[in-house]
Image (cartoon, rainbow, N blue to C red):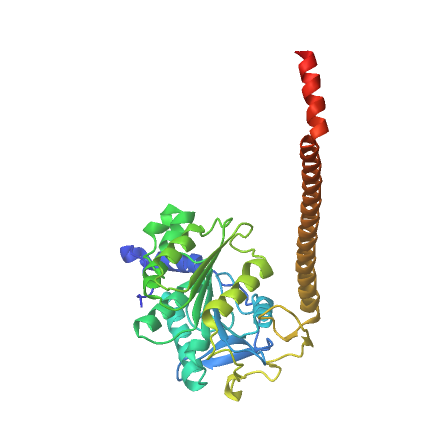
Length: 378
């Protein structure tokens, strides 16, 4: 991994460090949640420290998504987004908090973010015994840094990983900062060099970016996609998304579900697998790892069986639209076929008329009449 961020400004570095850290890691202040947040778990990342995470369990899930959120967010701001992804993708979902963000102690840095994610991955695979080939790392914006680093490290160590999803990724923090202001190049050293790390990633990989993103250009996703050596990779560039606004279903749920079906889930990993957090990770009595939901029978392939009422309505509307679209297409095909049949009948009638005329031309009386009339006119 890389060293923590340094400020290469000689003796004055201490003067600029608080400002630079505030720019690099603008966590919400005050935190957008407390110790009583539903679905909050505390995962041990050292002998003395635990990291707060959001955990959503799905009874029929076969995969686990470990999620690293974007900047200017914490577990409180991404709660409903995480719940929605877990439900609609039908996956176990574990969202990781960063040091210094929310109610997580410590100082945010490249080193602390990388180490925390790696320790949580080790806890899930070694302590909870969840197979790494069933785990997908999902990073958004800042979160693409630690996710790409861990995916690269696992590939370098010849260890398994189900997949990697990067939403609005950057090639490096320095290059992303320079896209906003060239002055940034004189203040910080390069960290989270995704373009270098992605060259080691061999697991299935997906890159999602909005073409309207003015903070991190979508061309950075294209470059990462091209640099990634994985044989199973996919690039999605949304015409309508920017850095913060994505259509949940069109830009995320639908394409991610297809990616998981096509590249991650195999015959060996298709069966549901339980993932239960030990009692030691539950700090609050109000915790509920699987809130009651309502059942939905849906033709969507990776749709969860237990989702909320509002999500049921949303899904039904989307399904109805798709069905209406298919019906319209069928009607168009039927109309076209009817037109073709009419044309065929017209052609048949024309052929019959021509055939009658030809037969009339072979009649001897017709020939004699034609000859006499022709001669009389000469």
